[in-house]
Length: 382
Picture 1 (cartoon, one colour):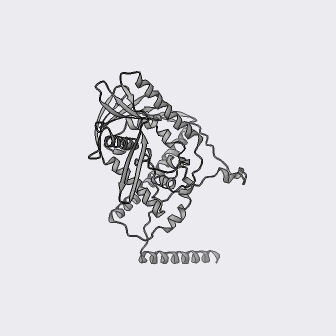
Picture 2 (tube, one colour):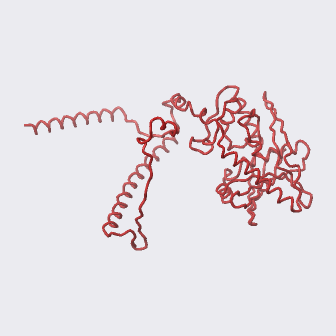
Picture 3 (cartoon, rainbow, N blue to C red):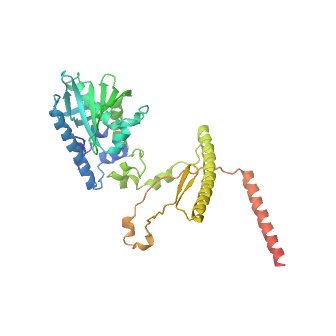
């Protein structure tokens, strides 16, 4: 379903989609889409990823249909009408289905297929932190559940969010209870396909209201022609795959130059700066000391003509290493611009400005130093 929602979006008119409503989807990207900016051609590999996810959804649905569960209302359209102040819009989407169990209890069914590393991150996460949850998927599911309760099926309060590991075919199921009247989601538990069960009981307040506010912010930003702040660094995977990346970052230097200077920061920031400088100084000294010890051990190994040795409870090894680097001098000037990419980022520098007295003392010290050097040089000449 998500692949169908995303497919061809670079050629479609913007509208509020459940799949882009969560906190992880970049609002700045949605802003450019809303204003109709021309996107860069999508990476062909991404179409394979989207199509691959759809087939995993089909496989899971086929597996469910062979059981005593009833999966129905597949790809049923749901609309959530919203009106806030002067803004009126509809969040349109399609549900993956409704799952009916043996007791005729119906739950909203949502299916996602993800890579192994993301799957393991969700399963092994510390759920004291909300960000450990698949928040985008949960918000999307809550929008669907809100629409179902509002339109025709108020009895559907539970969501079964099924996430499949595309590499191992393992599943994790999140059981979520959503209450439209309070706009609260309770993530009750998660169950691994191995049978392991974890009780979570994590409350998420106002998941649908958050998404509505997000779409409202995009409407306001589009009216004012003022893009939202960037949410990710340029080397983040979301930026790398974003079709509006070039447009987003082209004025970065100008934006940085326009930022205010000489602002007074809070006392807590001064304490943090002081601590940062202390830690940096300690790290620099420790790095120097580490390099000295490392070099001494290496010299001993070469002296002993050994590539492996035992030192008490430690095993010491020397292994050859080859580092491949691109020599830009060997690349023709015509080709170099085509294989180069600008990466924009910021550098944080923390310095301690000198007082007038300190500047005067330093200038005096320099003058005296020059005088001593001149006198020393003159005596040698004589």
